[in-house]
Length: 281
Image (cartoon, rainbow, N blue to C red; front, side, top):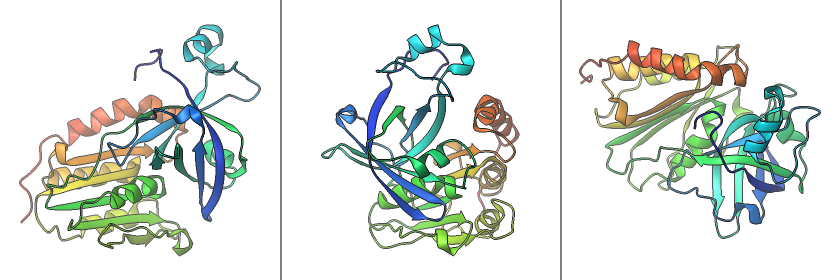
């Protein structure tokens, strides 16, 4: 959505929190402010959480038009996108999972310390992917940042679907109980001392593809995402319309810095990888 365009800020309240693993925290949000929340069509739905910069306070309810008209740019809300892990419209409960690495970052430390009863402001939902029941098989691959979306997608798989899912995490303590309706579980790849995405690159590039008709979802750190996109487009011949892929984050870049350059980076990558070779037999 374009900068400066009017957007309605949603408001929810933290209902409960749960530590899922050493590096992931779950928040369940609720409240009447979620009435009419529009998630459900996609398994990669996300919201953009809004955070006041340190020392800044906005009047309730938040109005982005007013904030941007009356505050200097440095005082505008900071945004962080998070996948909708689950949405219960009957109970008005929205579940979000957060990667936490100590005091690193903005949203992770906040999620680790937030308490029930606190207000949360957000934009959304957005999204665009859901497993295609017509596909011959499905490929899911990502690091911790993509784990919630991969989990939600596996749970939305049609019965009888063929699924190859790979999730890279730091170690076995970060694994979760995730499965499709048919009981298919992901392959957990433990990073250890290897660079982020190295295990995923090895797993996908050496995978025997059951057929050329694949619907793929690949997300995570931008470096390995770029390499896997090249592999899938140029070596495996996967068409763009059968591939949901993007860098959720990039090593060495702040979230604000990555969002500022992401559009141009994606355009460059697409131009480099625009012409696929025939699919491998």
